[in-house]
Length: 145
View 1 (cartoon, rainbow, N blue to C red):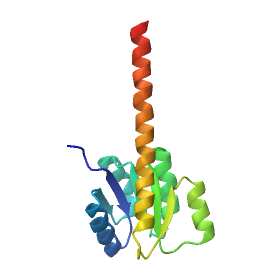
View 2: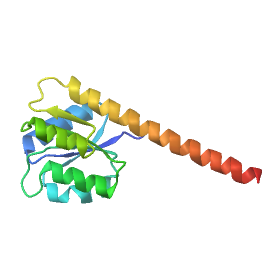
View 3: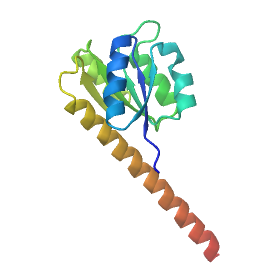
């Protein structure tokens, strides 16, 4: 049996955490919800999630700063920004700092979020396949020597 992909969701709004958790769990994802952004990096390490959904406007650590911290911790972790307080500049800053996508609250239509998540997991799978292929090539080369 294949393990469900894990998504870390960071948002200071408890009702948004519950809503997204319920929706994404229904799509077959294992969702780790974090309300305190100061604990997000610890939760990321503990959950081994490869995808983070991140609010922008949060107390103590805003989403753009947390995005930078996540990318510094592990550049291979993909991040989707999910926020209701977004300007064009904020969205551009998020993309420049490595966000895969920006999805806007309120979530009246799940399709943009679902599409962004599916694209992110395809990208993760592609990278994992490339790493496996590289390891197989190295193993073959070592055996041939």
